[in-house]
Length: 288
Image (cartoon, rainbow, N blue to C red; front, side, top):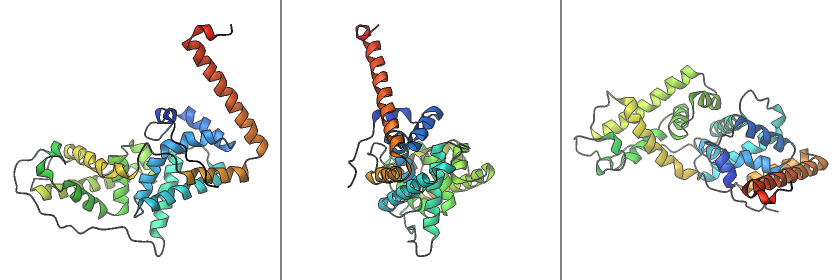
């Protein structure tokens, strides 16, 4: 039977920052997952879903394929969850697994090649231009197409570092952990990717690309986020197939008695928390 689709909890969205929970919340969620608690699983899986799909989209040719990569990542992660030792955050571990699975899928024999559009743009007439208007003014008509084509023509390693920096806007330490790169290698690849994008846009509008690269890159990054955001809606419900993977794993690996005990404890904790909130809101409800 296909599991019922459940919308994302506002509380889950509020507790996660860019898909990453606090260390305390993540520990609670991890222990809940090990005990077969679906609420704990959702606490991690819901905010991470759009992040993981965007990462998978770097090595796939359609949203359907990206979704398949994320489902497969969760299946493998749950099977090997006992191997996770907190040398990094649980979310980072999952993101790294998604990247590695996507890379493996893209490099296997017979994999469909990623699209590589051919550049064929009509350049506007030369003249003064304000990069902060990118890509909204008429002067920048076609800029998003230039960015999309230039980005798609890059090697995968450049697209990965560009994505985590410009689209996800992660700290460098997290980006290096997820991509499995030393910091100096990450910096070198990122600078190369940024230069290619700025050079392509400067060529397109007939501007001088020899200066103010980092300042211009801020506006280029905003345009990149416009291209990427529609591929994974942060408000979408958790994929029912991901929930099904968790429930299948739970049925196979978590004893029934542990699941029942966890469910009872969760209900008691929720009841006590709600009772405390009611008493704070109205002291007359206090039993003291």
